[in-house]
Image (cartoon, rainbow, N blue to C red; front, side, top):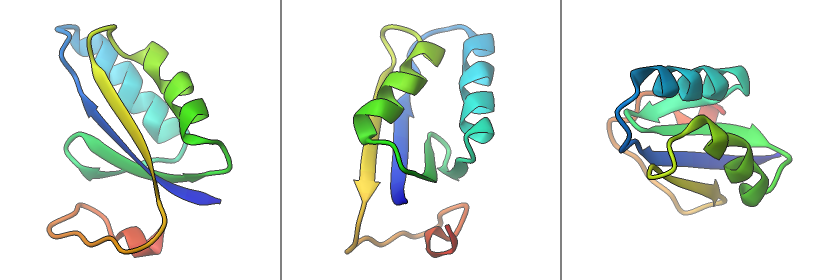
Length: 84
């Protein structure tokens, strides 16, 4: 299973929509790394993850799904990515 980072900019104004997105991220097993960045492992592609999550967002929000392979570093992250 690959390790993915999900980053977003939430531009819309509906707080309920963001609660739904965060609930879905938790449901799929994602862990918050930074305030608007989550990490999780999946057998799906980045495109499949994007397509799954975007309906939980507003049309003008931004979403980036990145597979993490090697040569990364963090400072002050909310979780240890090595433990995922």
